[in-house]
Image 1 (tube, rainbow, N blue to C red):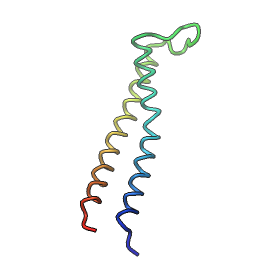
Image 2 (image 1 turned 120 degrees about the horizontal axis):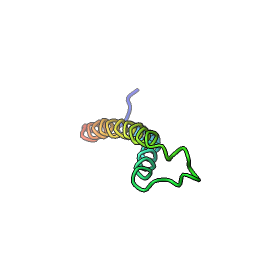
Image 3 (image 1 turned 45 degrees about the vertical axis):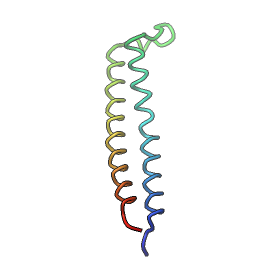
Image 4 (image 1 turned 180 degrees about the vertical axis):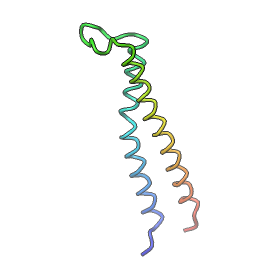
Length: 88
């Protein structure tokens, strides 16, 4: 049984969607961490987020997740381009 080009592309697209879903919390962590570092959170409403060490950790962990997402998306894009350039 051979896998068609459309089926390969569908599998790659599904993997890309999963990477985007996994990458989303990293983006939120970086955004919240940077916001806390630059603008600051209200200490009465969010006392835990007034700690700068936690904010730096949020940026670091979120950045690692985002870096993984970029790396994985580039791999999948390269794989998709290979499939698209194959003869039919």
